[in-house]
Image (tube, rainbow, N blue to C red; front, side, top):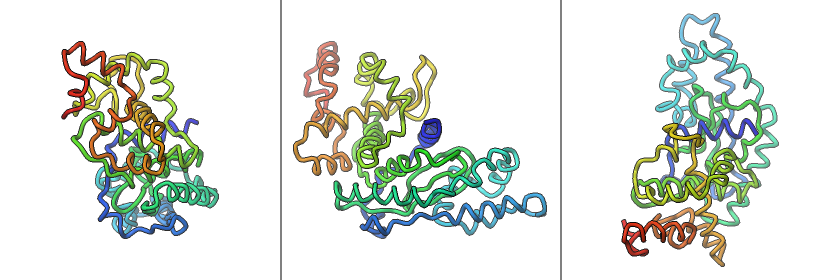
Length: 314
């Protein structure tokens, strides 16, 4: 359980590259059995690591310069450059060593991942299946999705518990094409939708802490969310908290999941429901069709002398 929490917290601490365009995905296979697990960067990292005591130059220069697309995708906001990586590895040498053999059982997880991919293929036939890159970064991200595929920060893994759930979540980000203004509601639907469908196809829930807190404090949080969901500010709901109360990070994942779940449950055509969740055109109308927060929206609109339907206008 601990690794699931650690991975998801760090995954959410940076803004994920979500909603990639269809054109950017066309190079990847539509067959889940052809999906690639790429671990060669981890081998190259450890070769560099073992040279630290004897090399007169930065041994990680080659790792960064000649790395896979996964390393390239992790460089700009996470690795930064070879010197930054070298400095971090020297400082946290013992922490890196804890993950040295963490991929020993990756073969079984690869089989499990292909089954998860196959489940998505059933529910969403137009899905594309990107490669999964295991790379080493600077302890600042558990993973992301990019134009090149799904990238996981291997140094964050103490074991492989929860890794397939994390891949499922990132796979959904890769499939998403969510439109609309950059609001708290939209991004909550992006993250919550990835959690909902990721759990639906994998059976694994990777984000327990905000869900437990959300359920225990739902009435207060629903009222707050309704009052601010059209705003761009995401603090206290996504990617960081102000510490105004005891809430954990990423409550937006929880409420986005709840809205998505309500929408899904209302639809008779579940295949179409999955398609709709992955391709939301208007987040406010999606919220309205879910019916999930109707009683709170009614309360809010009456208090502010608004018509109910006007709440769902941009």
